[in-house]
Amino acid sequence: MMVFQAAVLVLSFLFMGQSQAQAQESTQMTMDILKDKIKADKKLIVATNMNLTDAEAKNFWPLYDGYQKELEQINQRLLAMIKSYADAYNAGKGEISNDTAKKLLADALAGEESEVKLRQSYAAKLGKVLPATKVARYLQIENKIRAIVKFELAAQIPLVN
Amino acid sequence: MLLFTRLLVLGMVLCAMPVIGMGQDVSPSTDPAAGGSQTNMDIFIQKIKADKKLLVATNMDLNDAEGKKFWPLYDAYQKDLQQINQRLGKTIKAYADAYNQGKGTISHDTAKKLLHDALSVEEAEVKLKRTYAEKIGKVLPATKTTRYIQIENKIRAVIKMELAQDIPLVE
Image 1: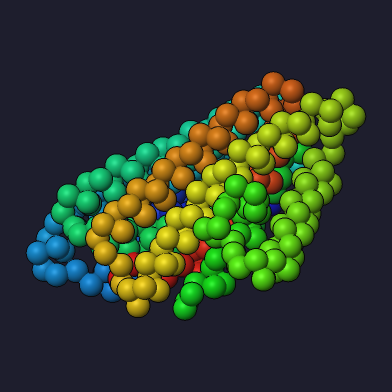
Image 2: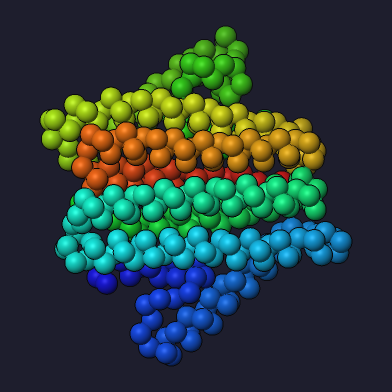
């Protein structure tokens, strides 16, 4: 991993997926602790910004946890894809084959589609248990966090050659 | 407009929305007496479009044969993307109006409609990207198709970041 360390780290930290490339156990443990902290930090951000009543919270948090779990699967796919690109990019010294590019693009588009579908699915679920203003507010918070992640990735991932 | 002026400008400028077809909804001024600022906005938007095209051109390293096939698809993609941007601009404008009118709060009905519109725009954007990735994939090598979509993604990530920073949470 020469060029892509930053992007993979951004993903590993922000997306909270299972780490696949940690060779050393101590590093793995540190990563796990860090991921737990990021998960907790995100939940705290949501909690402090949602102003939920007790009744709303009772319905909201199980759905939140369900959403994060499914989002984590999408993030893991994204992480795996970026790692594939990083490996190919580094092996080819900055160049990748057309076959690899085709597969990566297909994976990236499929990931984006899954993300949009998941958001729609949870917007509908949340809409059944929370007032529309709070559903919109929650999805805005998720979007803001996602925008930062996407921005960081866009800044870190080099263009295909 | 109390709070959303910068946001509306962002919506129009960063999304490079065309003035034609946008009607009076999100124009900076609809007052005939303020036609000068409308003209300036037109010129500004044209410049942003040209800047984007130059950015793509200088980063794509297309040969003549590739360029001949790519640019018509690029132009068509930008045209379709513009329609999505207009919908996004209208959604932001509707939120800004409701937010300002309600002094920071909006009704549940408005929130429901805005969320629905925002999700529809996202879905349309992803579908459009797939459509053009496939079209471009038929005329360019996969590496160049991927590179182009990456460039679009980078530009979009900057826009989304700006919007995320500037749009206040629903109350």
